Length: 198
Image (cartoon, rainbow, N blue to C red; front, side, top):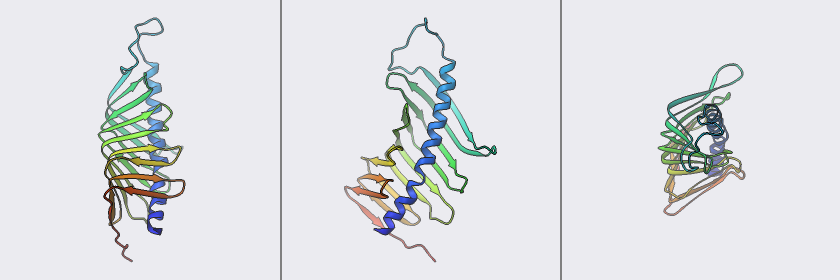
């Protein structure tokens, strides 16, 4: 149980930088493209369920005060849906690195974020991978990851796996809570715990 608590605490470290980078990049692109919108106040209006702008084969970078790249977000396509104020990215790929050397990558077939970034969903072959100095690598995989950054929570109602080093846990669904450092798997749960070599 101690090992699971430590695993969750380390996993929860990747959530804030991953989500902040994703949301910052999305917000910047939305603001840039919304300012270039055609039609103006008297122009024809699209129905709210249709995208009001598109981006294709885009790449964004975020820099720190010293000019070093802290995050890169790219995708095959991005669109903003004004009716429910969401952003949808096809083939999103995120790479973020903290000043402490923690590298987090995430990818999926589809990424969806609401307007304030309080809910980010990764759909289809979702993978979040974290490499931190002096710690085993951590990988979370599922066909669906539902991330709530403000509540520091991840959930999935699809089969999921969590791998830390050579230890592997899988279950029918996943609930992770960063506030108390716990995670639970339900359904057909299995796990293999491998002690790190000394």
